[in-house]
Image 1: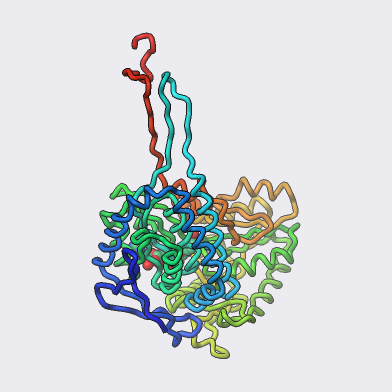
Image 2: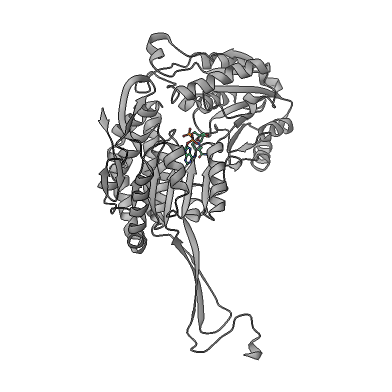
Length: 498
Ligand code: NAD
């Protein structure tokens, strides 16, 4: 077991409180991954001050030079990928192949955002007056608070860190208390890549204290948050009062619609991967399955059989399909929803119990659950469970299916399985979510396109995706007019009168 510190102004420093807490392996809770700092306000103050001090120098470093550091980070991440992926699995439980995917996404993002260092374009346009020109420039905001969840403990932080830094901002990174070790490993890589002191600072601790204080700190110029709706929406109100830009990516209640003409084998793989991959703990996890009546029984039987045969276990074991839930609260919440679904009258066809056989009681494991005959207004069809639980509903036809897909306060990711090109094309238009997959599951976004949710899933400032996504949020536009006529020229005033 190791102990990690905060990283402020280029140094790994003790928290001012002197207090540390355990980060544990959710597959085996006696395994303490690390002890991380329980930081206090003074630590946030120091981190913000360090970021403020570093800002002018970082801003003035040409963006292609900033990019070189990201290229080096990409190479270091690539080299350390197996070890980092093991740490991801050990600290948050996802299976090793998904841990590798987490790191690969970081590698991809580092290269992609490094490329943006030579593409931070503004525009030049003709001016209406002679001997005058005008242009728009992308400039950084200043210091960003970057607040992240645990389910992609490396990938989500790098979405924010690399995009904010390439634009010339400095940052204070507050990771989830369930993945501090992965956060520290990531920051070590950036340190090794040559990031100057103070450009990125890491402060660990409780969200309600450290995260809250950081987001509203007077020395912070913008916030990028990924996490639950409850926290994100409260932060958005505070940010509005402070007149501070905030980007929020939040929860989902993602649906897969399967029409009767679909390739059902393909759809079954998509449902299993979408619903039970990462133990259902993805913002884009499929948690509602909407089946056209003609294939309802046939598909449901196959789904129940397949869900029941998934192997639970430590994600580092090659035979494991589904790892543990993140912690006791996560497990209890998912188990509570099993009770809620039964009380609401849905039919539990498999799973839904805490798994205890063969040593699984040492971790937070739950058998994948399938509910059938779910009504669209039931809580299990409307609320984010964030566990291995799916709600299956019938629909009469395409129109009814789309109505059900859209009947949600969330709008992050949706999918349709159909071999009818007209329905596939209509779904692109009709589905009300930020991501739409055709003949693929609800998960699998690629970093070169924007990623963000509609409705209560997001704030409308997508992550990733270059200039149409994160770069737009992490930079602001400054307009420069230059008059080289040597006389007073008045725009929009009749030329004749000048
Ligand atoms: P969470 O909201 O509990 O925590 C997210 C982060 O916010 C953590 O770092 C936490 O410490 C911090 N935090 C908590 N309270 C805070 C406060 N009052 N002020 C400031 N910061 C605070 O979420 P979680 O359990 O870590 O993650 C799961 C949630 O994240 C799910 O709802 C999931 O859908 C969502 N998520 C969304 C996306 C997306 O891109 N849309 C991606 C991953 C996860």
